[in-house]
Image 1 (cartoon, rainbow, N blue to C red):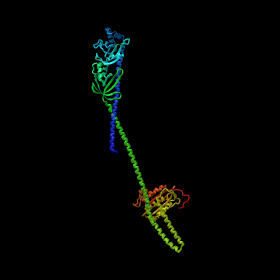
Image 2: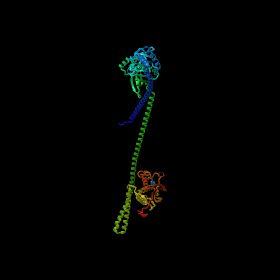
Image 3: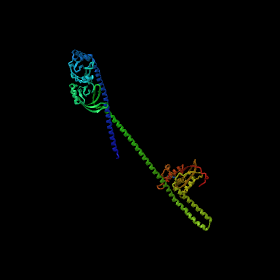
Length: 592
Ligand code: ADP
C-alpha cells in the first residue's frame, strides 16, 4: 500500500515523539539508579563504621571473664562453698576489677547458677543471691566453656550483652561461671544523633539496639509464634512485648540495598534499607534512610537526554532531506539530458530532410528549365535529320558529314547535361577525396545553369587557372558553386547591369575561387547572417535559406573557408581551398 506524504509526516512525527518519551524515560531511570547506587554506597560506608565501633566495644571486654576465671581467689571461693567471708572478699575484688575494666557488672555464679559475688553487691539492684541458671550464657559456659548472649537484664531491666566463661577446678570439674555484662546504652545514645535509623538485630531478627528508642525490640518478619513463645519463656527480652515491623520490598537496588515500605513506629514510610552482617556475634546491622525520590539530577538527565534525542532526530531528518534533494536533482538532470538528446536528434533529422527537399526543389526548377532546353536541340536534331535524308538522296557526302557532326555535337551536350543532373540529385555520401581542378567544377556548374544564364541575358566574365588543383568531392563542390551562382542570378534579376565574375587565383598555399555579381549586394546587417540555416530574404516558397548554410558546411569539410563581402555593385563570395600538387599522370594544364 503506497504511503502518502501526509501519512509519512505523521509516522515520522510519531516516531520522534515515541523516541523522545523513551529517551526521557530511560534517562530518568538511569539517573535514578545511579542516585540510589550512590546513596547505597554511602550507607554501606556508614554501616561499616557502626560495625567497627560495635566490634571494638565487644573486643575490649572479651578477655576480662577469661582472666577472672583463672583467678585463684575466684576458684578458692567457689570451692569453699557458702563461706560468707570469702564471698565478701570476692565482692570487693570484683568491684575493684570492674572499676578498672569499665563494664556494667562483673559477677560469679556457682555451678547451680546462683550468684555468689558481684561487683554491684552494694547497689540496690545487686545480683548477689540471684539465680541465672535459665540463662543461655550460663548453660553455654557450663557446657562449652564460654557463652555470649544478649538479653534484657531480669533484675535491672537494662539490656546488655553477657560474656561468660567457665571456672574449672584443677581436675577440670566446672566450679562455676564468670559473667561480664556490657551495657550498650551509651553507644546507642551516640547513634541517636546520626541521620537515619540504625538497628542491630540478633539472630532472631529482633532489634536489640536502635538509634531511635521506639524501634527497639521490634522484630523483623519471619519470627514464628513458637519462637516468640520460646523467647518470652527465656525472658531474654524481659517484659518487652516484641512488636512486629511491617516490611514490603519495593525494589532491589544495585549495591545490595533495597527500597522497603515500612509500617513502623513512625507510621508507613519508604526507606532505603541497607544491611551488614556481624558474623562473630550473629547480629545484623541495618541502616534505614528515608527514600526521597531523587529529583534534581533526574530532571537534568531527562532534559539532556530529550535534547540529545531531538538533536539527533533533526540531524537525521536533515540528512535524509538532503539525500532526497540530491536524488531529485540527479533525476531532473537526467530527464533534461534525455529531452535535449531527443530534440537534437529530431532537429538533425528535420535538417537532413530539409536539405534533401531543398535539393529536390532546385532539381525540379532546373528540370523544367532543362526540359525546355533539351527540347531545342531535339527540334534542331529533327530538322538536321530531315536535311540528312535530303542530302543522302542528293548523295552530297561532304554536307552529310557536316550534318552528322552537328547532330553528334547536339547529342554530346544533351548527354552531359543529363549526366550532371543525375549526380546532383543523388545524396552524395561525402568524404570522397579526389584530386580535382576547380575550373572543371566551374565548367559543370555553368553548364547546368546555362539555360538560365542565357534566358536572363547575363554576361559571364571568367578567369581560369589551369594550374589549380585541390582535393575533395567534385559533386559537393559543384553543389556549392551552383548555390552561389543561383543566388547571384537571383540577385541580378531586374538589374540593368548583369555581370557574373568568376576568378581563380593563388593565395599563399591555397586557391581562391571568387564569385561576384552586380546584384546590389547584401544589406550590411544581413552579412553576418547569410550562412545561418533558414536565413532568407526571398519570398515564401522561393527560398529556404539553406543553400549558403549547406555550402558553408561543405567547404569547411573540404578543409577550406567560405566568406562573403560586398564588392563595388554586388556581393562577392570567396572560396578558399588548400592547394595540392597536380597528379603526375596528367600533364599540367591538361583538361578532362
Ligand atoms: P536562399 O537562396 O534559399 O534564400 P541561401 O542560404 O542560399 O538561401 O541565401 C541566403 C540569403 O543570402 C538570401 O536569401 C539572400 O538574401 C542572401 N544572398 C545570398 N547570395 C546573395 C547575393 N549574391 N546577392 C545578394 N544577396 C545574397
